[in-house]
Image (cartoon, rainbow over all chains, first blue to last red; front, side, top):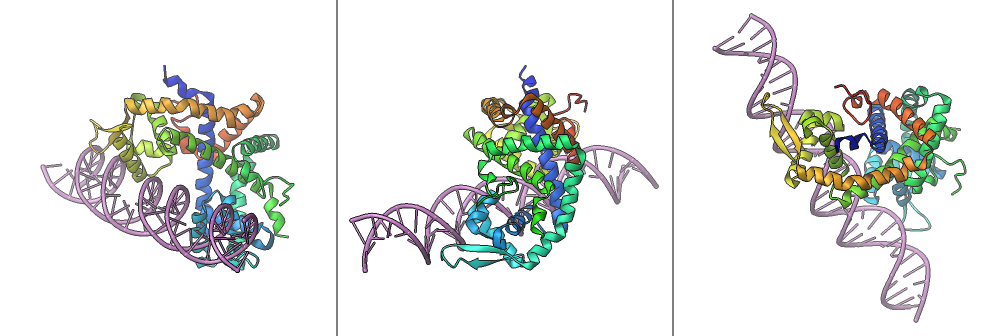
Length: 163
Length: 163
DNA sequence: CGCGGAACATTGCTGAGCATATAGTTGTCA
DNA sequence: TGACAACTATATGCTCAGCAATGTTCCGCG
């Protein structure tokens, strides 16, 4: 029977992953929306806020957000129009330009962050025992490092965030 | 310092989750593309293939795929044009229509499935010890049930899939 | 029987992303 | 110095998804 193929543990695994992530992002999106942000905009604000000088080159921003360069241009356009960030010319390389988070952008981020953390607590960290959580994070790290090695640099993880 | 806030373990957790999932979906998308499928199309084929009668009402398909009904209409349009599935009128309710996977659709799915399973093996199941994998799945199940309870019905998981 | 509300699918419109092409800038090498 | 290649950001065309509105069909109630 071909039907039984769909009960393959690997299908179960990816299905579970997908459904869990889908549920989480929907919850988060609703939360972000309350603060007038989309998921990508929140992501951009987070990346900028945690970067030295609160700024990032357009290219680096694209690399960190798994967004194309043109996608970054659009998002930055919108967010600049909203006053959440502004562009700044690079003094040493006139091709580059920086996206700099504004005080308004930081304020918006800080406004949205508590609720965001509460949701993570509600749907992830609060649901698992410390041991389970550690196991989950270890597993996710292994998967992330294998499937998305580019994300390892200057990102949420890796305490040795040199460069 | 506000900066340290970004090292909150909850931020680490969701970042890891996001980066891992992003990496996986990118790998999978490339794989699907080799067989002329998008991720959603693959998802639709999977859902149909595992459903009784190899068919599903448009509404139910929408519910299972976390896609809006109009989105389902469009996807089914494209896939019907490609011959992967066809519409079938519901005999008892003339408002409803079914999407039925065709032999060509099943063939395409079976063609893509081995590579898909291999990727899952390569980036998830093969990277973890059996214990780690079990822990991961348990944790994902907990998160899924909390964040996306609608997905529990008739889906990848739950052996007791009684309606 | 006939009417009003609900359910289902589709369509127009808008927003967002990617791929590609374009323009401007920098660095190198002869 | 001058030309060519590499890099950065932006503009354009295309695809796709969601929301809101529409048309059709079903159901219940007077």
